[in-house]
Every structure is written in C-alpha cells, then in structure tokens.
Length: 263
Image (cartoon, rainbow, N blue to C red; front, side):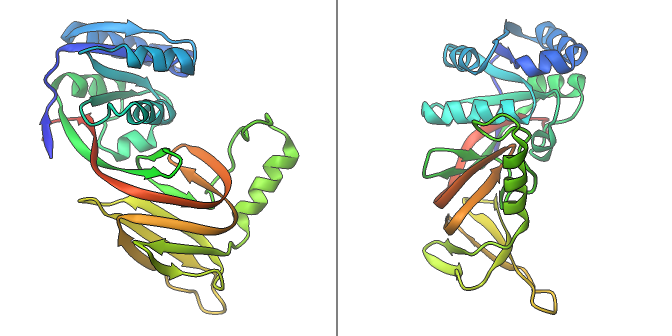
C-alpha cells in the first residue's frame, strides 16, 4: 500500500561516510531537497549524533543521505523507539546502495532526491529478531561475505580467516518455520536465506549439502523462523553478526514506510 508523503518539512541527515566518499553527490542532493522543501540539514559526526538528530526530528520527515548501513541504522533506531509505524522514511543513496535500490529507491542524487519530494510512502514488511535487530531486505546463513572489520578486533587476519572458514564449511542447523521443523541437525546445509515476502510472510530457502547428485533447495514460508545449532554467523542486510546458537525472526507486516517514486 502506498500513501502520499505529505510533509514539506524535511530533516536531512547526512551520514559522515557519505560526506567523505562522495561529497559532490551529497551537495547535489542537498541542493535539490533544499530547493523543493523546507529542509533542515544535520551533519552528525558519528552514530550517537545520528541517533540524536533522528530522535529530535519533531514533525519533520526524515531523509537519510548515505549508504545501506545508514538506512538500516535509521530503521533500527526508529524501531527501537517504537516510532517506525508513524514515520515515512526517505533515503538518497550515496555509496553502497544495493539494498535501497532493491526496495525501489532510484539511483543517482537527482532522481532519488526528486523521489523524496514527489514520491509516495510504501509500507514494507520487516524481519525483527529476538534481540530487537531488524532485516529490511535479506538474511543469509552463513554470511555470503566476510565482514571488512570483524566486531571488536579490528582487522586481525586470523579472525578474518576463521570467519571465512565458518562461512565456507557446511553447517548443522535446525530450521523451524512457524514451529514446524523444515530441516534438522542430521542434514548439513550449505546455506539458509530468509527474505520478507508479501502480506506478513517470510520466504525461506535452504540448500542442503549435495551427496552425489545436486540437492534441490528446500523452500518454505511462514511468519516466524527459528534457526538453532552449532555456532553460526549470519548476514542481515549490510551487517554480519554472530556467533549465536539460536535466533528467531518474526515478520512485522507493513511495519515501516519508505518513500519511493509515485507509480
């Protein structure tokens, strides 16, 4: 469902990484937004100032200029403060933005800024885990790539090698969808992917380890997905997390609004 993004009062939060990586695109987007609406521009220096600016937006419609990580950060902050349902969020992608584009946001600072001004808010489903983390686009177990900087240890080569090894070897996991076991620990898997589908249902695809002939993917869908087993890492949108031994994700139907071009 799409509704008009009505507020002409904008709070434009420019992620610091975007300013450093592509200042020209940031400038263009800021000029387009300022010419078309009453825009208050914030230049946070880090995550704390980013959160503070978003929390003090008042009646202004928030616009994030930044990459996919900045978009996910904004959604997560709004979710944790229980302010997501009543907020139409906009993003102008600068930097890595495959997630934003997959959700319908146009590429390029001019096209995406015009979508902020002229677009509509489309309600999207969200995956929420049992630690209150969110997934906007896709979840992968094990992660498809190694994090550039593993959490808490900088870029130590030995840990990067460990994570890469864990991502490559088969995993023994129990995957339950709506309480029903889809695959159990006795059947090793190469990967598990979960994506928000439509109307409050998550789509699950499991690729078992092939023995001889290639195994067909196991597919299921439901409102809750629980993964249990040996320590595993997972990649949710732009972030790699773990290790954990159990995690449950539930679908929050129509939980957030993203401004996209009008049909």
